[in-house]
Amino acid sequence: MSEQVRTRLRLLHDEYVAAVNSAVEEGREDLVERLAADYPDAALRVMTEYEGVRGAA
Image (tube, rainbow, N blue to C red; front, side, top):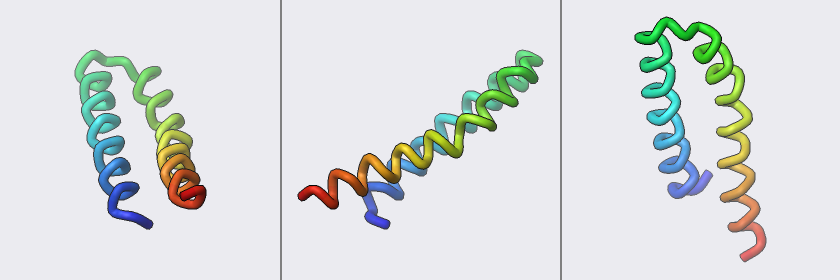
């Protein structure tokens, strides 16, 4: 996995942690569940987008 992918995944993780923390503070368990369910797909998109670009180069 390239450093670019690792960096983007770290940023994605940080974004989701902040969003989940905000949702928890607001008592939005529905949003927490949705974010937790969406995260794996978002991470997979990052990996396939960057690897797809790298593979095409």
